Length: 596
Image (cartoon, rainbow, N blue to C red; front, top):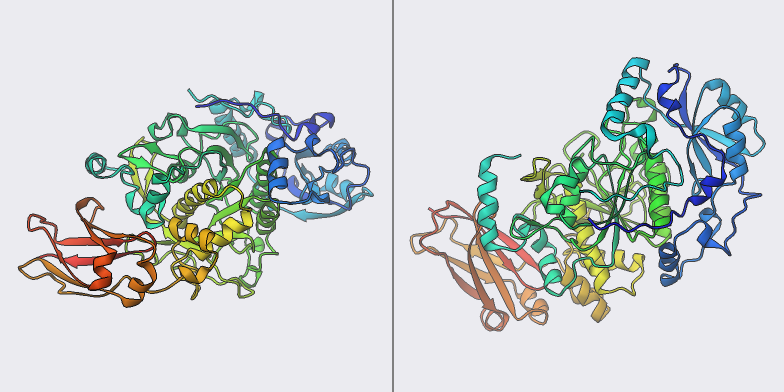
């Protein structure tokens, strides 16, 4: 792993006398203690000013704003350190200050919060449900994490000075599949999910995320340091905002699998969309329960990502119901302004960060709708489809409460190839795995077009969706594609490539007959629109495991002259179910065919 230290932009915390110790874990645990969000009336008296941003932002963050012509404003200023000192003087524990929300996440008793409420600079105190645990079980959690990570001696300084590290399940049938795929595709098992959005074309053009900084927000990245697919990955920093420590390789493996969709670089087995990007791994999800405080952790992590200079936030997290039902959201709250996490996502986007988030997995549950922060106005919320481009039943539906199109886009999130904690290939279902497919595409697309603003990258990707002109609450603007987005940059008009037209108008017979010939007729609108964009259509015949059994190529010139085409299925193929993928530079379609 590469190790390169960056001067922490939050170094001003060293000026504040905040006793951040493990007393939270070791003090007597009484039911009156809780974590709440204390909001301030103003930032009056702060020693920081907008004319000297290097006091609270890295040069990379400043350059990102300059490039995108984004002005600094008062929300960028750190909170007044004197306010923090006065709160700490009450005996409260300050977990994190938040400049965007202008306040602090504070742990204290009811009596202390009553004192804090009376401080002249305090606007109000918002309840953040923190899971109440009995003393014994909470200390058990603490001791477990201390034994594993050394929490008592690391990661408790809010300036985060030591974040940078130098990191030294399926059955055996999947190993066989992996070896087979090695012979047929550089991407290995990620072939389908990458080709669906044009990442194959993107990599062929030389764009693998170099120069793009990506922060991954998740619930843990268990054993990522030991996984072969991450060998040589460029790591900026890692931090656990739940337990306030630099290590993130314990707890859940969900983040490791999400990261593998993006950053894997094991040729022939699993190659992600952006293996050459720099990664920042942030744990914001407390896997021990579902609590609104996790929204606050997400906010704090987003502030950190902004200040170090991250370009893309990849988040496969979503909320709507909690352990305490009193904090549950309603459908009418999906307005992009109600949930703290949604507001935080938009604040990040306003600062030139591209925010990509999973849409949610509630499509076949009572909630059904997208989750928070997928409702935010300036994020890309990603739903899930399968290899046939069919919507996954679990993929959360839109739209937002105010009628905005959600999800924004869909990618492959059903049967997505990931890498598991046993250092083996695994498959995943969930919009959690669809989102990093899009983040990988976004990284390469932005690398190819470095002068674009984050808002322009977001719009180009939306306009590359296969149903951009006719979006709906299931697919949003559809499946994006690298070359369609590139064509949009070159030609300037979304109508040049945006269409809902299918490639194949008809195909028969199905099941195949003894001659093993499939009669295919290409749609006239497809021929008229896409013959300008690609000289050929590639045809791949795959089995049910996604293995490529045969490849053929037909020229667009021949298709334009005669849209009727006879596809000869090789006689030696013994699979009864075949998936036939037709792919041009700007579109793809998969047919399911039965071979007797």
